[in-house]
Image (cartoon, rainbow, N blue to C red; front, top):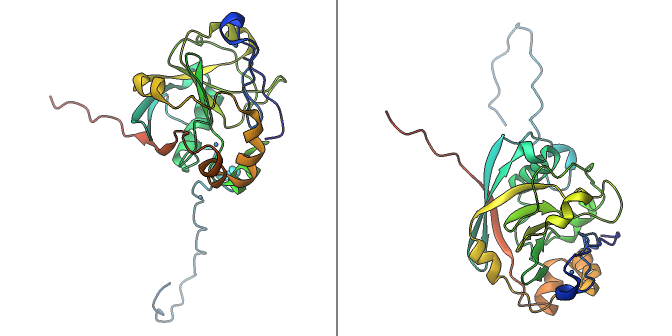
Length: 245
C-alpha cells in the first residue's frame, strides 16, 4: 500500500529505529431456474433479490456486526493460533477482522514482517486484485482500552490519523508504549503463542518487498522470500454448545 507505516519502538538499544509497514503502512517501531408453471390469475409477487454474501472485491458486502466475543483460528505453516476477540475493546477493529476472516481475506497471507522478540505482522492479501480494493478502506482511530502486551493483537497504522486498514500484528513482548498512539488491541492470542514465537524471522523488516507483494501477491513472495510462514486458512471457531443439565 502506498502509505509508509512507521513503528517507533522504545527499545532503541535492542531494535534501533524500525519501520512497520501497512504495505507500506505499519506501527511505529525498535491482507469472494424452474419448470414452467400452469397459468394463474393470482397477482405475481416480484422475486426478492438474492442477499449479497461477503465478497472480497466489494467491501460494501462486508459490513456484518461481529459478536461481542468470538474466536478466530489461524491455521499456519507452523501450527494453529487462536485469537479471542472482544468487541468492546475496539469495536471497529473487531468488526473489520470478523468480516475479513469470514470472506477468506487471509487465505495464504504471509507473516511478511516478523521481528523476533517484537512482533509478527500479516494482512497483505495473497491476491493483488484484493489488495488494490482494500488499500484505502481505512478505519477511524479508536482509543487503546487494553494495553499492547505480549500476545495482544492490534491493527497496524500509518503515521497519520485514521489509517488502519487490513494489516495486523501480534505482539511478542510488552509493547505498551504504543498505547498512547491509538494502537488499539482488539484481541488476544489464547492458543499458539509458541507458534507465533516460531514464525520465520530471518528476513527481518524488508520494506523493499512491499511493492512486489502489492502487485504480484503470493507469487512474488514464493519466488523472493520463500521461507516466510503464512496463514493457510483463517476461520471463525463455532461457539461451544452449552453443557447439558
